[in-house]
Amino acid sequence: MTHDFSNLAGCIGFLNLSKDGEVMSTNLTNTPPLDRMAFEWCKHSDHFGGTPVRFSRFTMKDRHVYVFKHKDCWTALVFNRLLEPAETDQLCDQLSVD
Amino acid sequence: MIVFCEDCGQKNSITADHLVQNQARFTCTVCLYENIQSLVTPTRPPSADIKSTLSLFYQQLYSNPNILGSIIYHIRDGLINHQMPDSLNKEDLILLAQTATRCMSLGNETGDDIVEAEFSLPRHAILVFYICDQIYFILVTRGCEIPADPTGRDFHDFFTSYLGQIKTLFKNANTHP
Image 1 (spheres, each protein chain N blue to C red):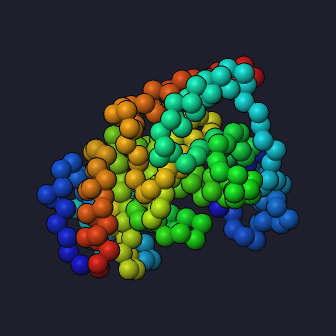
Image 2: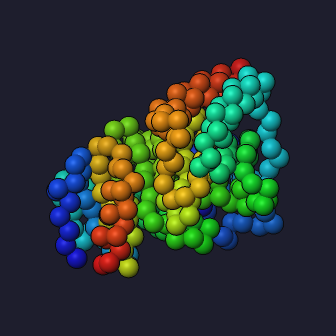
């Protein structure tokens, strides 16, 4: 699974996590504690009352972390802006095929 | 599941083994206080000031047909206020609020508190905003995206302007109950 997120405006970095929370690939230099947080978010926001989540977003002061589920792993993307609905739709389509 | 110690306020993680007859029973990992917390708690009525501001806020919020409902939830005290469809009972609402707020508290270890979260479902979006002191505002939309306001107002601008007022009122209410 390889994706190039560098063409996404405002994308600060990405983090690919295995189903066990292991970092498979990232371009972030300060991975901890984001990897632990992202893994917790992935585990807890995977389903919402039995309904699968398309994606989840966690916003801090100036960062927005989007979490997308693949078949058996997750990708967390860190942005410095909110994404438009068309952009999240595109990412859902792009990442769900893996 | 994340719960907060009634004695020292420390965040504790518990499992299903700690849930007995709608109560969370656990020993705080920091102060060793023996907690017995009810999971179904009575609704805490908002103060008059908060009620008045919320009324105006709800009036404008629900003028947007894409808003399905909202909940104000306190991590320890449970439901404070809600405007959700009658088809959901109180236990459903609490479960929804617990699920929505659980992830936000998980980010606090970085020091960069999460102020907002979004869960995009196939038919709904659930937005969670931190107000103050373990109080969260949860918004449920029709459709899986944050709705565009038919009047052209930016939804986030509209919402955050009211959220500021609501935060101030809740903070004052907590300081001077």
